[in-house]
Length: 126
Image 1 (tube, rainbow, N blue to C red):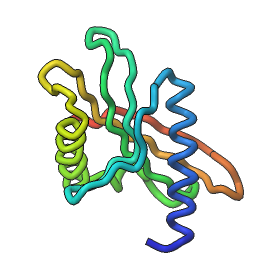
Image 2 (cartoon, one colour):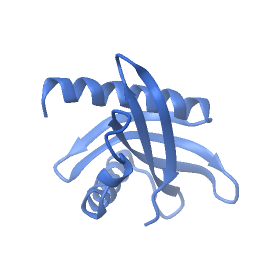
Image 3 (tube, rainbow, N blue to C red):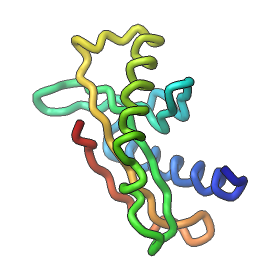
């Protein structure tokens, strides 16, 4: 990944984290990686019917008009996120049998120079 791509990605992740914080998420980790994959943001949020839910969030940043950021989170990427989430729960001693878990995606459209044009947020159906 080029230096410019890393800068834009870090900027998008910061914007996504700020957005999620404003939506009531409690960010507990960022940029977690292991040999199975990486997860951009890990956070807790309160959900009706489920209570305190652990969310694994993939962030993709695109310049406005560069196509769908969400399409970059394909089936193989989702599999890697799932495996990394299992590893994370084992490492942090989180009981997956009693902890509600959700996978999400945040698309950030814009650039550091021009600012955020749009943020889209949705749950990844597994």
